Image 1 (cartoon, rainbow, N blue to C red):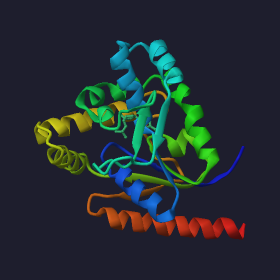
Image 2: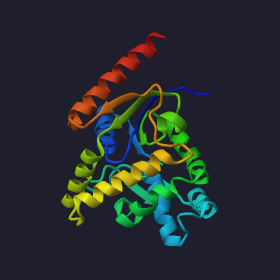
Image 3: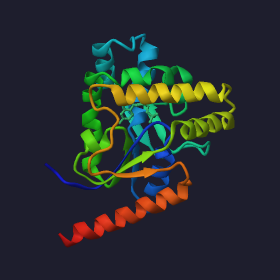
Length: 234
Ligand code: DC
């Protein structure tokens, strides 16, 4: 097995701050950011477009295998952290719509879908230094990642963050609805049989309830430096 000393795995529940933290960290370290949630969202969007049902495991796995999904550096200054391309089309914001959000947890539950998305994720992990964000990076995708972080926060804190993000983008909806959706998402992500949301045994857990983004990034940076120094002396 290859060692993935230069993979920084960041897992945790929805809206724990993973994407923003990972983007800042990747920028500071000068490495690539790869947000694996975008893959499951792109497959969900493809399913909606092709009329494949969220419980059609085989149909979804075929879509996941055949769709050309890519992440690229941001091409517009509209708040995006990266571009998401589905068969060459920019779907960066389309994958964030409520329609996609409503099915992505169920789409990502199917083992066949997860299997279909593994080769792309592992190829990225083996190709270059990268900050990888997801739910199962430290447990399943890259179990030998050099640094594993599990970012968490209370459901109420995460729902408040998501609610304010949505308001800032002109979205409607209530805080209570966001909180309910957050709880539902947690239950599906943690309760599924394959690759459930879980901290790896050797992950460093960081609770972000009372921390701002800069403090979280600084903590992870310190962990990365310690880890890098240790692996040099081995
Ligand atoms: O991080 P996000 O909200 O964009 O993720 C969308 C969904 O994808 C989420 O419900 C769980 C799933 N997901 C997953 O199962 N495994 C990953 N590595 C990343 C995301």
